[in-house]
Length: 422
Image 1 (cartoon, rainbow, N blue to C red):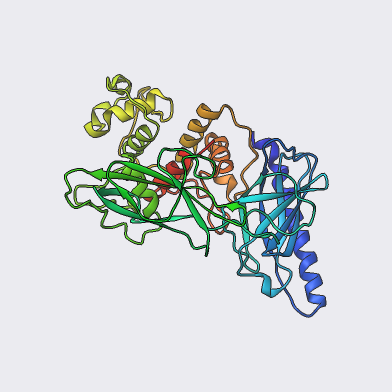
Image 2 (cartoon, rainbow, N blue to C red):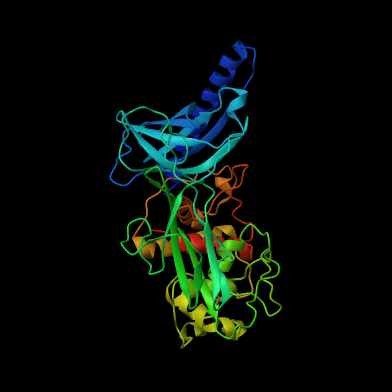
């Protein structure tokens, strides 16, 4: 798919270079050299065609700090620059997409993009949200509008996970005077008639999932979900002792509470350990509710006997679901290699298979990674699908590093994102 689109990357690179040269020249004429921040990615929209072409406006707060173009005939690939003055850097960016003269708010993935002078951010996804604005041209749904921005997402204390019966859960938001609405029946806290305006702590006496939003100035925050599993014996709830202050602590604890992942017997999670194919199989099978207790699929592998008993049914289930496959050996046999560590390219392909089974075949553009040539041919489409869906991201220098092995924390985060794909 991507080999026919190599010219697109050259067009984007050339456009960015020309824009940066023009911007730096203009700044130099004013005796202040400013090197803009470069951004590339794709525009996604439901019910809005991004053909032919279009524009991108970039903001910090209500100030427009940059512009860009959607490359014609590319299904939404764009390039833009931001930063006209030194004071424009170090602040979060927001975006507006202009199509056929109409301005649309756009939510970015990643949600927070900080402009740095001379920096670059690749593989950004701008998803159009809502109806076109009145054309005032200031800002978007994630911060660049003259209208009040959405309030901060609610937080819960203690964090989701295993708790004792009778544990008291408090909800809060960083937005002053915002109202928090929540539900415990699985319905939307922004729309359900069963929602409750938070005024006092929630007592957890049974397994419970709290969904919550913040509300202020006619705007709702994104929805937050907090799942708790009650320890009926009232023994002290176990905590993963090596996850405190880790960047993935909330995601890991939520997956633990759902029984999707688990720690080790010494109460550690070992987030920086590299994940194996057997471990990955177990997490995927639990997350997707896949079962195969007969383990019949293991007999096709020459090393089927080496697959640990704790992973046998899960490996059989993901093989049956065609998510993980074996390796062809020189003697014609096929091995599973349960202890082999999983690379970023491999996990991206696995996640893309789940997406296509759930949503159908996906057509995507080549991801804008600077090391695209290092991604194996067999993984190109899968990496493209996973990147377009926000399941995998690149590194700050624009690389994907397809051969880099995935840690347990990284795998948990990617699979958690997979559960929210729609």
